[in-house]
Image (tube, rainbow over all chains, first blue to last red; front, side):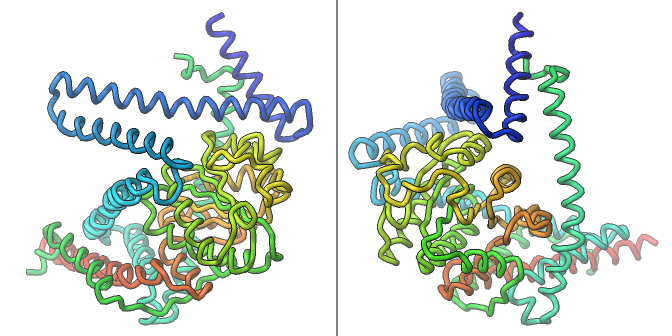
Length: 210
Length: 271
């Protein structure tokens, strides 16, 4: 029964959601909405579980003085600091996200610059990786190299200033060959999703029960 | 000598790229922007809406993508308020919520718009696809109140909003795959008109939807933001950033050419 009941729940909910796609009216539509609300509530709780799991893992590292535990101290302090500022703002002001609350200050002046900095490092890695990887070793690599360079030059204003056809070439690459490749990948992903979903709903794929 | 070009130390690449990005920002020089077809289509889809139509903005990014997507959001909001459209904002990425809030309230103030009458922020609900499907039936099933806990029915402009049928245009600003879900669920199932804006990395994924007529337009990366700023005649972070991006791209192309010169020099010597 420990396997059959979860399999039955999966099959029933899966089929009801699919039927709801074609028959959105009650009672199917109402049942579908209830299931979706449950899903949203469970999704909310997964965040809490993630937070607790992250905190526990790092607190364990600190107490056991594992190598690099200093980073864990930074994480735990930052986490508690964010929670503290959040609770304070929530109680002291009309809402946590009202403009001018300490939480919004903390978010705009600490979290945003840190996140943007981490992401902006990508520019340096991409430059270095492009320099090393874009070598005309084979015909295919040369094709990729030329297409990449044309898109890079065509998608910035300086390319238009150099030759007004560069943006048109870049647009053509994006709208025809690039799009065709993406469409192929999308169709493959969609078919894979349909097959995997059916396998789960029909109880063939059971790895999630482990 | 030429062989050395194949192995330039990465620290020199980093230094040159940093200079190529920082110096244009310091000079403040702006380059002329050419508007591409996908961005023009996105602009037209909002421009052609009747006054007081409702536009749903979905903030599906976080601060990591803020430099690219925030100028886009600001330009779109300016366009919406300038056209006297009613703005509903929601968020699928919880960490992006304050970014949307900042932009919405900031731009609304510029245009003297009133909360609850001209714009509303209904906040974040977990569930992504569940929320998208739920809005198709009744928005109150998932958003009973706005971000501050005010019931939707007590907000004037929300009293007649129930599902996608009451929303003229959905604008998703994407740093991930959430846009795909908007197209598959809100677009395919409920016929919602959609415009997608995305980071330069995400934008290529959106072209099949545009070609198939599943979305109205694409605003891709900082370039798309700059083009939209040009269309709304309000230069901002997009247009300013394009100069730095131009010089950065040219620097990368030069590095690629140098790398290939070095590579062929080594290959010729090997033969």
